[in-house]
Image (cartoon, rainbow, N blue to C red; front, top):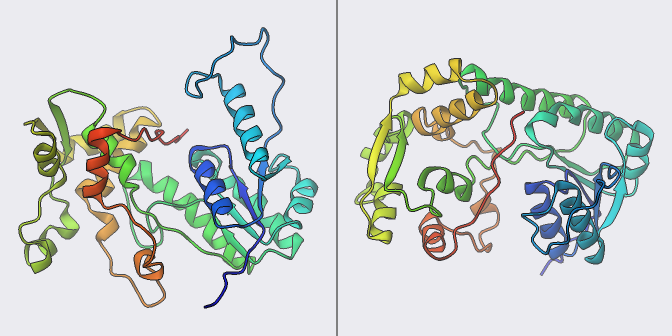
Length: 311
């Protein structure tokens, strides 16, 4: 049996929602793990009252406690700004792999990472901050397309610099959108369906696919599991499009994303090619959580995913 080679992995954006998970995953797999983080600002004055709840802590204390926890777990913390080129280059020379989990407003700052990786000359793999749509094969309404175009800029810059890369297109994180659509922590009888509830790109495919016979949609499954009947409101496509034009940023971006996923069905609008690697086939032994199993979890202890930051 081939032993997996351990790589020194640096997470950039480690104290964010997704970066936190990446750090823990890297550690759990035995990789020496580094976190490149912004220097902490001066502590607030007067100091806040002591508390044991992460959720109630001011952001300064939350980040401080998280970094202390990382250090206790064996993570090497390197403080620096992405604009500090020399510091970034010296940090990169300590590792083999760089994983960026920077949020949407900072995506273009990855150009600084790419420049530093090129100078460092030792990085064996760069994973830019994607984890959403397959940006080279989908189109979206303007508010969302701007974000996709920024990710494409990072892809092209990575390739032009001849940096070994992996692009991770996670499409829709189930916990995030189940929470957004079903609100499992609430008791409201109202649910909103974006569009008709039948995304254009795959409705016809599913209608003629024997594997989709007698399958329940998300809302029907949730009603059965909860024993409740919800009052469904459909937000028509044209109204969603109009909201992407009239709502202020970043609210218009969220609407454009909902249109792209649940009305256009863009994430299933193309076929995988030979060069693509589908995660469940690449790592069949991983214990994946199905949507049905996630709904069972939501009945008992619903996850509380952080809403994405678009601005």
